[in-house]
Structures are given as structure tokens and as C-alpha cells.
Length: 109
Image (cartoon, rainbow, N blue to C red):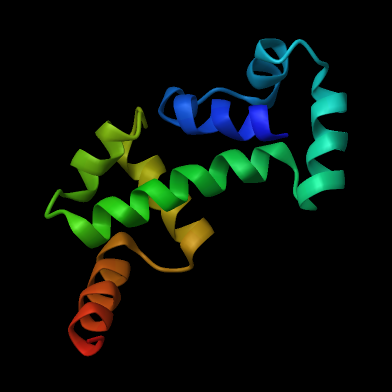
């Protein structure tokens, strides 16, 4: 699972699927899924998506890049798909997230 997480960190922008990661680790997707669920309690697909979301949040918090620019940096072919992905995973639009992050950063010492 640690090797999987390291691969996710290295390749999340490439949008590899679970079968791609399993092949790189020389295991089956089922074996990878069982291991991830046993160790982390989460499916490998969720781990991959969470890593993408984390990076998107970092860009939104720490850069002035537009949602389209962030979408491109993260390897999304379609900015609209990125927007839907972000809202589904974060519960906020990119604009609302950036506003709330900016407000939180101002309020925190």
C-alpha cells in the first residue's frame, strides 16, 4: 500500500486507473483493492481521487491560477469535467472553495 501511495504521488496527473497502478506493482486490481481496504479502509480509486483533490485544493489556496489552468496542470482533458469532479468531491465550486480558503487564511493568525 505504501508503494501504491508513492506511485499515486508520482502519477496522479497522468490519470492512471486502478489497473495501471496494479500492473506497475505486479499485482491484480483485486489484490490492490483488498490491500488498500485492509490498511486504509478506502478503495484505491478513492485514494487516487483524494490525491487529485488535494492538489487542486493546494493550487486554489496558494496560487492565482484559474480553474482552467489548474485543470490543465492536473491533466484533466476538459475543464468542465474538472469543475464537476471538484464540486462532487469537495462539496463546493472552485470559486466558493477559493473564497472560503481566502477568508479562512485572513482569519487565522
